Length: 287
Ligand code: GUN
Image 1 (tube, protein in one colour):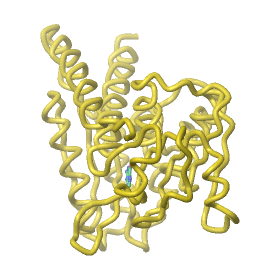
Image 2: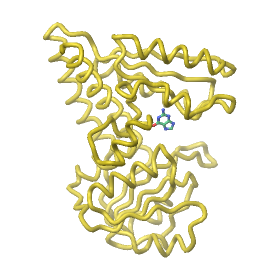
Image 3: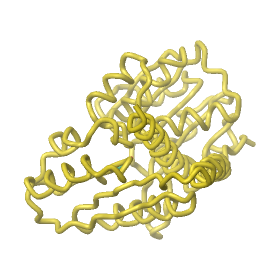
Image 4: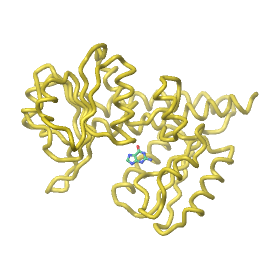
């Protein structure tokens, strides 16, 4: 039987800590940290993610505003809103939920966000800092994965890590953070050959393929730790990850559940990033 890594519990502890810090700021007469969330269109999954992010903000005492924008909004109008939020001194963090409708240029939109307010860590300034190992706002899912592993006292140094998925949101930043922890990292993707064999050799498997029951027993070894990042819907419309959990869980050392694994950690790190941006913002205002 594997150790189940309880992301929900770890995230809850992080949130309590954030909540305590917010209370202390308010007691000093300071304003609440503020997060603005932009949602373009009506993608059902994005609506749920945005609602969860906003609820979490309120739980820890942040001010949170959701901008629900028409799917046909022009690039100019969206950039205008981002520009206003960049200039708004009560806004510490700005998040534009992805994916954007096809007519909007994702890169240009993300690059319009002030890097100091980029709580998703997607601006090239922040990814450049991540790449060079200097302090930055880190992409939330990647940072959440590292926090989860640290919370079970995972010994990273020299471990063979396999990251399945090369997205800018999850795969690439996770691989860099694992490298910064002294893992030996392989990034696999849809063109990778002999994936099951590669995976069998991995001490640590991080999967974000987005395919139900993709990770089967032949991908595993008894010492393996698996972090399942994917959020898929199965035939019964239930949320499941990439791992064939029932068959794989008894065969590995530790594993995250879906739901209740990486998802809550992503939100907790978003709150932490917002608090960091808030603190930096206050310090900048004081100088
Ligand atoms: N879409 C899927 N994951 C994310 C995320 O972490 N941030 C944003 N902004 N959009 C996403």
